[in-house]
Length: 67
Image (cartoon, rainbow, N blue to C red; front, side, top):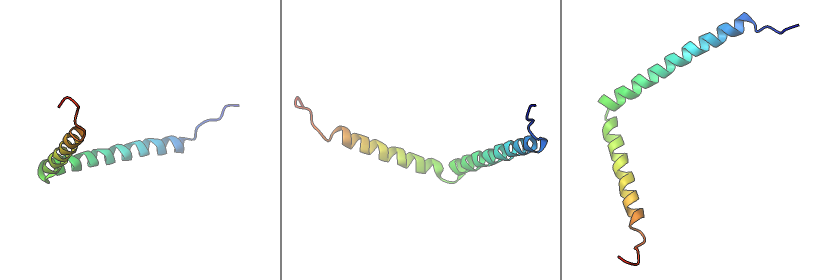
């Protein structure tokens, strides 16, 4: 005797996939809008500059003997 998956479960899974995909699309569009028009590019550039400064400071923290 095989156990069959109820039809309601399959419908629930299909609905969840559609809702999840729609939420991901909305999130992607909101992120793209923030990046393009809300100053996200400046914020990310500032973070990248800060990371580069920290990397430079760490790279130059210990001097090599031959320097």
